[in-house]
Length: 472
Image 1 (cartoon, rainbow, N blue to C red):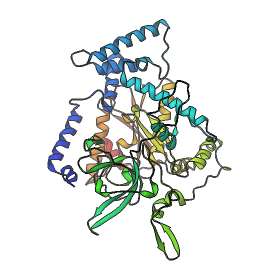
Image 2: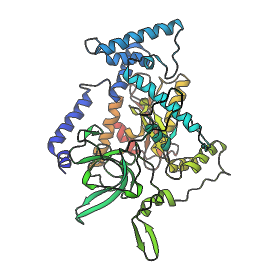
Image 3: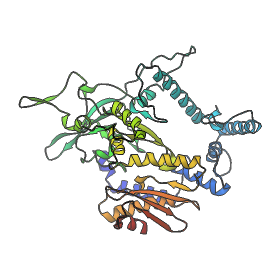
C-alpha cells in the first residue's frame, strides 16, 4: 500500500503537475517519443514544404542541437543511407514497402529488428497456410488474437538452413490468475477480475511509464467481474476494471491468486477463458443445480445469443459475418494496426464479436469501430493524394474523462485538443468524432481560420457539450 500512498501524496501531485507543465510548454521534448516524432514530421513539412521519407526523418531525429549526429554508429548509418539513395537514383536499388532505405541499413539495429519482424511474420503466415483447417476469410492486414500470440511466441525461433522451422519452445512468463482487492467493509479479499500475471516482474519494470514498485506485479485484465470496481493502483488512463480490459496495470502481489483451472502460458493477454477447460474447478451448489463460479462473468460471452441473419444481410457483409460466426464466438478478436498519424503513436485496436455484430446489424457502434473506419479513410486519402488535406483525430482525445466536476472534465478535454492543435499546419482540416451520448457526431476544425463545423445526421439542436468544449 506504500505505492498507493505515494501516488496519492502531495509530493507526487507536485511532480505530476510539473510534468504536465513541461509537456504543455514542450520543454525537453524527445524527438524519439511518440508525440515528438509526429511533431518533428510536421516541423520538417513546414520547413521543406513536403513530407520527408522515413530515412530523412530518422537522420533528423538522430541529429543533436549542434548539428552533429549522436554517435559513430549513427554516422556509419548515415553514410549507408546516402549510398542507398545514390543507388536508388541510379536505378540499381528499388525502395518498396519494408525494403526501403532505412530498413535496408543493416547497421541500424532498430530498423533491422523491424525487417526481422517482417520476415518472422512471413514465416508464421507460411506455417498457418499448411494447417488442415483454414479460416473462411483472411482479412488484409488483420490478425486474430491466437495468431498474434503465435507470432509473439515465435520471436525466438531460428529458421534452419534447410528452410524448415521447428516449433518454438514458449517460455512460461505469464499465467492465468484471479485478481482480488481488499474490501474494508467485509475486512477480506473480494474477487473482481480474471486475467494474466507476470510473476517475474521487477520493481523497476514500468507500466505506462511508471515503475511497478516493491510488492507489485504486472497483470492484464481479461474478464472483469465487478466492472465498476476501482483499480488498487490506478493509472492516468484507467481507474476502474472495465477501463483496464485488454491492457496492463500494476497489482499488489499479495492480491493475485494463480488460477489452477486455467494453468496455461502465453506471451500476452489471452481471450475470454472457457469454463469447460480444466479438470479442477471451484463450483458452488444452488439446490440441485451446479453453477460454475465464473457463470456470472461468462454470461455476456458464452450465453448471449447473438445470431446473424445471413438471408437478409448485405452481400458485402457476409464474409465478415461468416468469419465472426465461425472464429470469434469463443472470445477471439481481430487486431487492426492504427498508425501514429491518427493516435500520435502506433497501436493496435481489437475488435470483438460484439463489435462486428453491432456494426453489421446497424446498432450503436464502439469507438474501436470508429478508429478502424478512420484508418480506412486515411488510407484512401493517401492513395488519392489528399493526405495533406485532412487530419483524423482519435475520438479518445475529447472523450469524457472522470473528474470531480463536469467543468473540470470538459477543461481537461479542451486542453487535450488544444495541445494536439498547437502545431497545426495551415490548410489542413481536423476531423474529430465525438460521442455526445449514444450518438456519434463529427466536428471539422480549421484552427487557422477559427472555424468549427458540426455535422449531426440526426439534426438535433442540442449540442451543449460540444459547443462549450469548442468555446474553451
